Length: 126
Image 1 (spheres, one colour):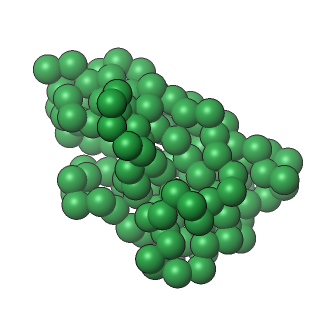
Image 2: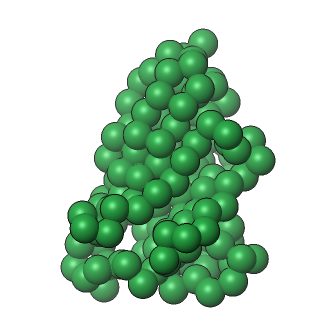
Image 3: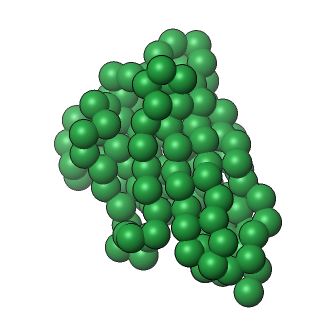
């Protein structure tokens, strides 16, 4: 079992930055891919970014490319999502998820992940 805990959310003005963290406990998730998803009020949960188990390949939804960066800290069993140039449309609850995802197609599919955190709120004011 892997337990995931997100942190780092908050309120920020448009153009600002936040760094979200996803810390794993219970067992190491160094062999798992990790994805960040978000869900805005009244909308479906969507994929934002993902990172391969090795950390060697990353994936982003088009709307965050060039602004968000996902990276792993293997020593701390943590995955971070650095969010720069935030926009009001980035406002959502952000979730991290982990599992032994093995295909690029599955990386952005919520159904591919068995382990989820509780979410952290990100609010971007205009």
